[in-house]
Image (tube, rainbow, N blue to C red):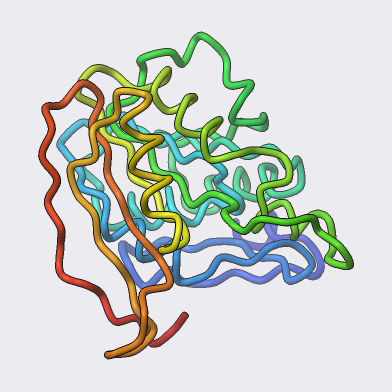
Length: 229
């Protein structure tokens, strides 16, 4: 099975959770520790219908499922055909019949997904600025070139059921913008956590959860020290 799913130049990496594996390609964008932190931050409920926006190679959705096999389904939305196709092969490699890989922009996710999901995860491109001399395919995974924070939040608001949760990560210095945008789309911020590279350092990453239609009230969780950033 593994040989039929993996192409030349690709590798298979163990997720170290649930016995799952993921296909990676060094010529495309590789996942970082942000994705793992997000999948651990998000909370699962039994029979959750989960979506992974800006899924890339599918790491957030796959790792979240490895940690929470009680969820009912996971749909990976990724706009780059090469990454979406590769995530589809990771699904087949793991024999996951309750997964789907959909190739489209977040802004273009079809109406058939309106109010379908109880949980949406997103590790978005959150750096500002153009791609300059960067490889374009890698740059659009890191920088807001093809999608903005507001477009992602707006899409999440449309695709979530009432009471559904939206968990995302972003730059720590965009905390006010993230919380303001969530509230603007009726995704009440309920949990926030900051990540530092070492004790005493300023935070570089935020993790946030908004709940559709929830009452105000935000839990500020203890900071995380992540030495692998």
